[in-house]
Amino acid sequence: MAALDPALRHGGALDAAIARFGGQRAEWLDLSTGINPAPPPLPDLSPALWQRLPEAELGASAIAAARSCYGAPLQAGIVAAPGTQALIAALPSLLPHGRVAILEPTYSGHRLAFETAGHAVIGIAALTEVPAEATIAVVVNPNNPDGSVHEPAELLALAERLAARGGLLVVDEAFADADPGRSVAFATGRPGLLVHRSFGKFFGLAGLRLGFALTTPGLADALRGQLGAWAVSGPALAVGAAWLGDARLCADIRASIARQHGLLAATLAATGLTPVGGTQLFQTIRHPDASALFAALCRRHILARPFAYRPDWLRIGNVADEAEAGRLGAALDDALGEIGPPA
Image (cartoon, rainbow, N blue to C red; front, side, top):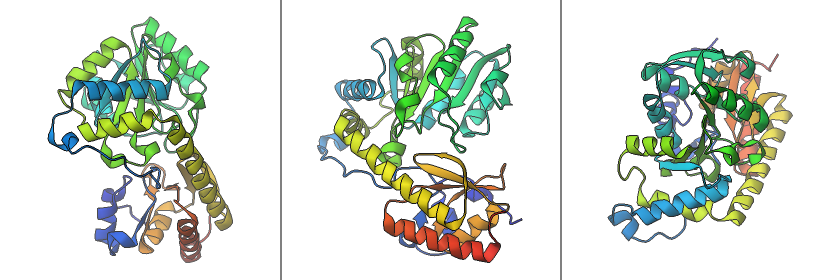
């Protein structure tokens, strides 16, 4: 079993990969993040957006576009943030300390944020395992990294039970935009429910740093106050308002991501690797020594995402086109020839 460098245990750690395995950035294919690898061209932005603090009207335009795109009702409170990670980190300090149930394995940032804020966190394997004493539950839907999904009715029933005891269900829909049919954004605004939505993954602009929380007006106001004034840059708000408000663009991006997903699925199938799950933006595969497969791909300057808690899993993000699919397929064939095929 190959040792896993702690610096490489998170998606996007390209600098750490280069430091260990060599090469130039332009030579690497980064498939570690689950971010759309083919973003649309940036819109023309006024130079004033870079020169001035963001105006309230611009923020309101981005919120209105998010409300329309996500299908949130008028009674929902919506707050924009510099990425959903900022919201994940800010939320726990606004909630009374209590027992937090997190459906795991999942994105570890939720557990870290609640534990850092002093909450007692337990991991659960199914929604039916949320204990009666829990006041907060966290579900990533669809889940990262195994792609498991839960129907809206199931989630809203849990939110109602938590609300009855003054609690909150947090639904992280970071990967929902490519397949929004199971989103519960339409139900936000009621007590007991908060939904996180990520801009950067679907639109392929993680560096823009933009995300949204959809919840009650009161909790949205508290989050906004926690983030502070001018938390989101003017350029980010302008791009968000333009793209979230463009239904045709969103449909085109969904079609593009579906093509990427098909290329990735075909590439993995041709190498004999079977996904354990995934979303439209990534697939997670099983190999008895996934860390060795990870390192073998790195030696071929392809970065994937390993998991310390599941040494037999490796997450691989979408390829942008046939050329990237061909490169990935050749690298996987070589790597599996080196370390051995999956069991």
